[in-house]
Length: 140
Image (cartoon, rainbow, N blue to C red):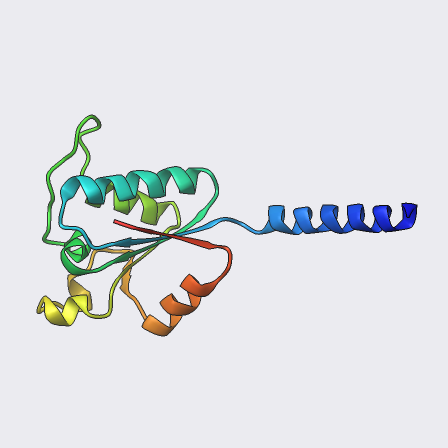
């Protein structure tokens, strides 16, 4: 009985240790045209990055405009920063930011129109990432 209890305890400790070593991964799918929704997605992604989560953001539809060099959304109070500026800060902090594979061809744009640090998503890679057990997905 004592041996069984010891083994169970050891397995729990090892399992908890393995979980603690698995970094949190946050996947944000941002499609909304709403400036505040885009901003809140970036605020939460930033908070998660500060808490050591690996952040990946997929922009599609109207939200894909955030990745364009020529697009400037309105600043949001209280910090007077735009969702695009917040997103650029996330890129500098190491977040992966991509536009969906459908965005550029349907917006008559090319990869040259994207800001630095943003790439075009590869659907097989995004799907594999989303299926990882350690990934938590959020949609805005």
